Length: 76
Image (cartoon, rainbow, N blue to C red; front, side, top):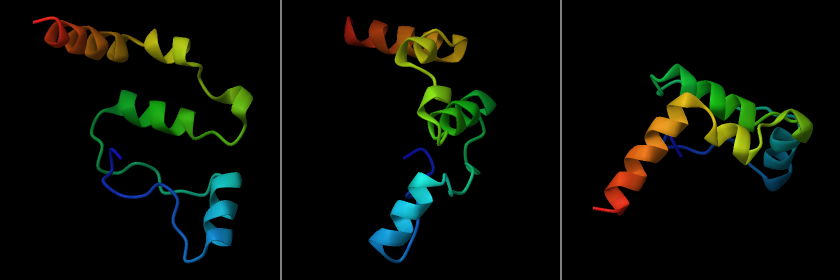
């Protein structure tokens, strides 16, 4: 979504499924924020045990700041 395109490409469902299972995707190119690039790559790790949990993600400084800004807007 951040790249404004699909993460996993393929001409058939089988090709897309293969790409998802084996983590074959283009690394984020349009995103300028290195923290966001790292988060995306970590979340797309093929080994679920190596993916960050929601709690781990929410503790990241860059997401803490963004979450705080959103929460402030919601309560205005």
